[in-house]
Image 1 (cartoon, one colour):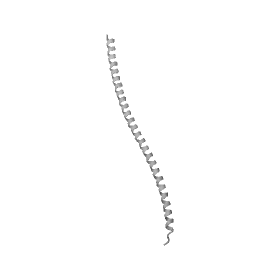
Image 2 (spheres, one colour):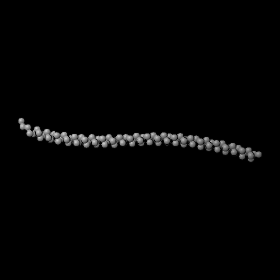
Image 3 (cartoon, rainbow, N blue to C red):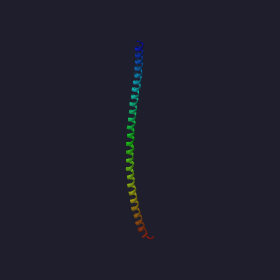
Image 4 (cartoon, one colour):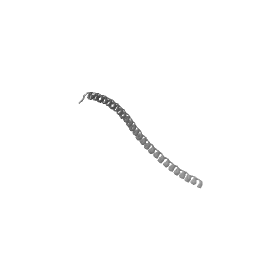
Length: 97
């Protein structure tokens, strides 16, 4: 009889330990789920930032191409002005006061 009672008490103790272990497991699973949500949010934010960086790089590339074109046009205009100035100088040199 005592042996049966001791076994019953041991079973109750083991059941309590099992319940505690299940509570710990449940809490750990909840924590892992929360961490997964945080990681997913951070990954989404990182992806958004990467897209913004990509757009900025494309914009910089476009502006660089526009600047190059403008510089080429300025160089051509300078060369044309130089030619006009040389012709003007040649014309002016014909006049004697």
